[in-house]
Image (cartoon, rainbow, N blue to C red):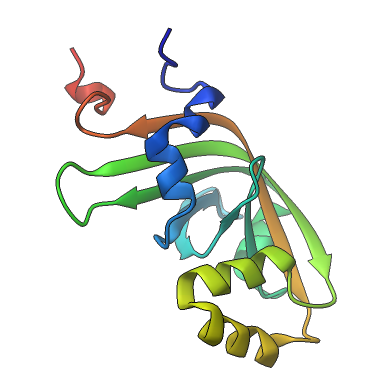
Length: 154
């Protein structure tokens, strides 16, 4: 039986796996302290269980995540048709580190390449960073071939 939208088994779908390992930035959506939505592009690393981002300890999103931990994340490849999209909803957990978050270093390597990633991380060593880990509670895949947005589904 095929997994339905919302089922975490979709994280194993080839489209999801390709996007989770891609160099596409995630779009991280959260609720600001006044109740309005916010979304920011951010590097990420998929651990197999969590989508992990590193961010400066004074990043505004950390203030909001201290109040409301429900978030949504989208990773998409719209560079050509058919578009490929992974949609996640989950709970964000924030931990403070005294140094670069290991998954952030992995992200730098993936997004910039080994040499440039290592150069960036060497400049950041010794500075505090927050680790934001999103454990998905819901997942959906849109491939515009077999899975379409619900508004287009029959």
